[in-house]
Image (tube, rainbow, N blue to C red; front, top):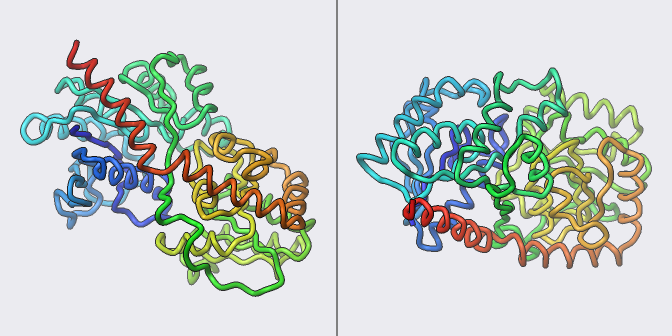
Length: 400
């Protein structure tokens, strides 16, 4: 099949760790590679944010990234991109007429969906939508701090009712979309995946001092990731250290307001000597960091899906996670890790202490976690499930 993937702000070529560069970039890159590896032709359309970028960049034998000229050729926050989605859709419609007509278009994030729907209607191409995050959830948790464009929830409701299929990533998302009025018949549950070749139990680990349990958190340095809760929880987990990977590069942490806030909290809680902020880490080094840990703590207040627990599980590391969003699907409570309520440092501390002091439990969780990641979430398996949905939708379009 010819598959167009639209990811307006999250290029698969972008360096991860920036404000708007994270899980979606990785998801799109891995999915494109897996689909291409299965024999499909894939074009990923993303907005040109640098005038020096080539029009087309190959990312494999049968996959390429197309830089769409929509808006100024410079970096813009994703929340500022809505005015340019009309131009984005019009450009794609011309490309699909003159250059390369896809069999299906799969949009990632709601603004990509608006552009894909416009181009799809113009060229008779069926459109699938993955939201990655919903405005209704973000508004509920962030309130006045939510910087989403006015009308985001209305647009998402419109997309859910207009596209040919909504690809939901977890059971929690199904409930959210039903509350928006999206018919269940339009939804297909296909989770995100993990690269089980890169993230595995085999390979080196980042060196560490002996004698302490290492708890690892991998997250952007923002409040909603719950890092402060994990620092508070550390007070009841003796002989354990917390290493936080994420945020700006290590050399820039001293100038980062939230990094300073985390360090001050650790000192206030009396665990300053047991908390290390490692800063940003190159993506290719992440498996080594996971393998260096005894436990991974994933404690966001809310999370649409969450790749960190899957990566940790694939590396054979048990996960203690908050019972929110997609984490309730990936982490099997009492089997591959433990689930705790969000915003509850006491419950988190109890779970971490129990796991830190029970080596047999940790090893059991670790083995089950690696098995689950490989059996259910490897990218070839996820790509196969999505390709089956694409085929059904494309056949329906032909029949119509």
